[in-house]
Amino acid sequence: MSRVIAYTYYNSPWELKTGDDVRIHTILSELAKSQSVIVFNLSARVQDHTITYNNGVVYVSLTRNLYKVTSKIIGWKDHYDLNPLIKITHYLDEFFAAIKLRNELAKAQTILVFGSMSIFSFIARMLGLKSKMIYDALANYAQTLYLRSRKSLTELIRYGLYLILHKLQLKSSNVIVYPSNVDLSNAKQMFKLARAFVVPNPLPIRYNSLEEYVNLRSKRSDYSRPYFLLLAGGRGKANEEAVKVTIRIFNEFPSEKFKLMITGPWLNMKSLARNPSIEILGVVPQERLKEILAVADYGLAPVFSHSAGTFIKVLAYIAAGLDVIASPYAVMGLSFPPGIKLHIVENTEDYKKAVLRLLCEHHSIKGVEKRCAVIRGAMQQDQKLEILCREVAQMYSGGEKSKHSPLL
Image (cartoon, rainbow, N blue to C red):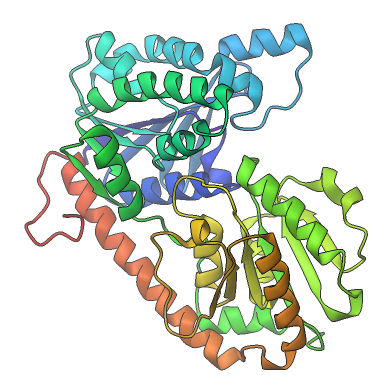
């Protein structure tokens, strides 16, 4: 069995707390079915290094040395992925990690790098490594920074610095991977990429059978009002804005007319939720997430400023057969199967009107039979991802994609 070495700067992708975690771990797990996969990841939570085995993938977590020393000096305690201090110390910690791993990396024929902020491929080339570098950018984050830079001098400076480093990463990589055709086309226009293709994001949840879904759905006892769900797993700006605007809007509605569930690291916003029908659940494990999705009726994705990538939250709603209320940014590049109603909202006022309309139409909540039909289609979409990953695995091991590959 051939071996693939991967690198990412996320604390613990196997915990599946964010959309990026889901993409990284799912793709690596598929590769592990035919390859030996070892992942080196930077972590703000370990003191030296730890080894974790999950679903066929071996993760070796390395400490962020500069971050660790700096956080100790200033008393920093918010150790989540890409917190402000991590962003400041990130590139030096990535450089230290590459030096530490140099001998191990030199044995690898192929190195897979995940992360829009990474310059790991560039550092590896500086250290003289000749391995094939496959770079999964997770999203074309440069597009987001570009749009923000037009409104702020600070964002313009940030965009310029990012662009310099990101171009070094792209030029040092043999192959670039994006999650959607929208990301790919934008990146090709911005960077004139030659060897780049799409591996779509996986569905973040998967019901093992329709029976499992029906059993979870039956745990709901109250059908007199619609259930709304906002998945906001990451601490990014887009999620923070979505949580705040959703709480503000639902605070205005009578509590007996709805139930709203919000997941993610937003327990600090409980004080904003004055309506007793708003529940902020915090970060929930995968099995609990499947149950929450099963009992919900509508998935929410109110993202009114540009954010890169395909929104994993929307893919989760699709996998569970939910109707979706979303901004154009949140559904860009996605296709919706028959049976799912998509309500597009352009701004906060549209969002409020759409929710109010659904509150008045709660009698038309989709039945279990229609939901099952959508979920059956989602299961077939997961099988397509497995085919794509096998194509990529062939490339990792030195082969070329077939002429009829869906990645072309």
